[in-house]
Structures are given as structure tokens and as C-alpha cells.
Length: 414
Image (tube, rainbow, N blue to C red; front, side):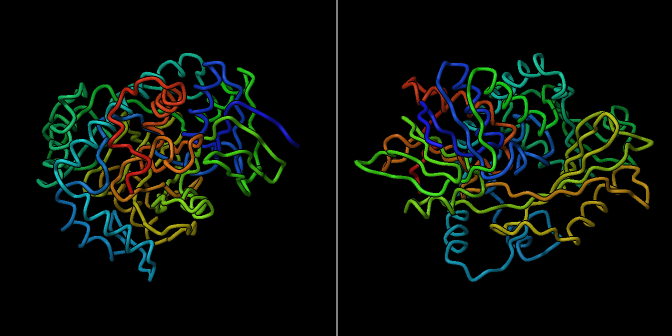
């Protein structure tokens, strides 16, 4: 195979397909390649939330003491697998450095804008593709501890001036709103505009958008090498042949660091393993998406099942399932919901979220290669900010003024 296109997108997860779909709508001849299958990476098993309220980068102020307590506890919400890795040491150094109020505020502002743009685009997509099951029910953030309630209210305070609406609730108000909860509740926040959908179906819908506009998607097509001359990508060698493109967009998620090393570029991304399990519909099935604050567990009601997702295990490219963390998630969810003791897990999934040290994606042209753009490192916000990233990348490729502060997202900041 040898072909020529306007834009080659490397990666067919939520970011790659969102970029490809938007560029295809704008008339570009697009080809998207993926080393596996469309949407079967990190985009497959996430919570399925489109929630601008959760626009917090991982290294928020105050995380230092929490992270020091969590890092070496295999059952904690955030765990780092011990490793004698220079890459990990550098990542942790940058992570600690990013824990300051000014940097966090700018990051939140940018991530809220990306997420709000995305939410609008998902609403449009839901009207066209009903099987993505877009529902704008809002989201409950709940806790039984004073620290948890304070964290939920702080989250509301961070985003309320940017058009993200919500209200603080006491325990009785939460139980009246969501009878599926078990036992007393201290309080939390209800964000009324947040939405949910089926993540894998969303990626498939975006892939269909690409194809319907004349674009092409090549699965099981691995990038092997890039011919670079004069500061530009001249051609891309893949496992299925050579592709020439005027522009190349890298949307390779947790695999980006490995690819960057081939190109001698600095892209400090660490794979953060998250888990999701699908269980049968409960007798007392929740009606709303729920974030259990102190457990960092996300509950998503589905038509005939329930999705339980959560944890962050910084392990780089380790895809193995740690059963102890799965059991911790079950116990945490059971404290708040009526899960049967003999809970049947219909599907168990683990995937790697691409985490930058400062918790913000790398978006924009790389300084060393004038026709290669990065769109990587969306941490836990890939689905949430996916279609907004598609809009932003398309605007940048067309030379339009970006709708977000690009200093925060600078692809060359590390």
C-alpha cells in the first residue's frame, strides 16, 4: 500500500476519532491508523462521563500530603508501582512541581472550556446516533465524611464561575434524590448539566462520521517509522505500507512516550491504569451517575447493567489486572449501594490513561517538526474533552485563533 492524504491521524481512540471526524467534516482527506482496533484501548472501558465539573488536573494543590500517604498503598485511590526508573523519577519531580494554585487555576480554566465544547458536540452526536445513549441527567458527588463533602464543595467553587452549575446538598437531600443509596449520607454536590453515554459506541459513532465523509480508518496498522527531512514528516512507514500526508496528528494515548523516544522528542506521559467492571442491574439501581468522593469510585447506571469504575495505578505499560484493587472497588461501592454479596462481574477491564505530570494534555505543533501535531496526555478526561480537542486541533491546523489558552496546553512545555 502507498497512499497520499491531507491529514494522517495516528491513534483511533476517542481523541484520534474526534480529530478525524471534525477534519473530515471540514473537507480534509483523512486517514486514521491504529495498531489495534477502533476504540479498544483506553477509550473502551471508562465511566462514560461528559462532566465539565471534573476538570481538575491530577496534581492539585494539597495533593502532596495525600499523595505521599497514597502512593505506596496498593489499595489507595492513587498508587505508584515502585520502580527504579529515571522516567518515573522525572515524572514525579514534575508532578510535585505542578502542585501550585496559579498553575492549577489556569489548568482548570482550560480543561473546563475543552469539556464544555465537548459536551455541546456530544449532544449533537447523540441526536444523530441514538445508540451512544447520550443522557444529560446531571451527576451526584457524595460523601460520608466532612473532608469528602468539603472536597465536593471545593470542586463546585473551582468551576462555578465558568458556567458549570451545581448546588450543595445535605445528606437527607441526597437520599431523597437518589433512594438507591445505602445508609446515612453526610452531603455532597449535584451538578445538573453533566451527561453520560456509552464510550465505545461514541468512538464507533465518530469513526462512522469519518467514513461517511470519505475518510479512511486502517485497523491493525502500526506506525513503524517516520521519514523526517527539513523539519517535516515526509512519509510514514506503517505495517500496511507507506502513507504520505501534508499533516500528521499524533493521538496515541499512553503509547505516546514510546513513539516519542523513536523520534527523540520529549513527551513525559505515564500510563495510569484504571479499572471498570460491568455488573448486573441492581434491585435498587441508581438513577444518576455517582462519584463516591472518598473512594474515588465512579458509578454509571446503564440500561440493564451497572458500570463501576475507578482507581489510578501509575504503572506505565503494565496492563495486568491487580485483583486486590478490583476487590477494593467492590467493597467501596458496596458501602454506598446495595450490591449483593455474590456480585457477578460480567466484564472486567483495565486500561491505561495517558497522564502528563501536570495533568494537562499536550496539544499543538511540535517545535522540531513543523507538520506534526500532538494531541496526547488527556489523563482521566479523554472522553470528557475528546470532541472539544477535535475542534481545537482542526482550528489549529486551519490557522484559526484557538478558543482556549494554548500556553496551558503547550505541546513543548516539558
